Length: 89
Image (cartoon, rainbow, N blue to C red; front, side):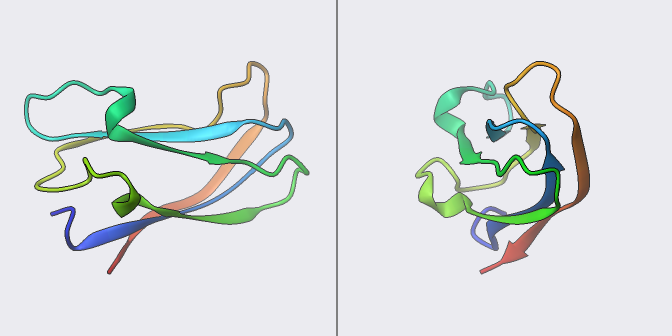
């Protein structure tokens, strides 16, 4: 239920500047840009916790049935993910 979980928290590190993107969908919908959020990454090789307001996307509503996380859009980047979690509102 998207209404219960409005914030995504990702703890990760990378060595190349880029953006991460989380896609989501409801039931039979397709994963697409309209149902996604992007956030800029800090590329210093250290862990950072990124807090993303999912509710900022008007499509974040109803029962979310599928997620896809793209940790970077840059080829050859070294990525390490410590945690991904949703926080309640």
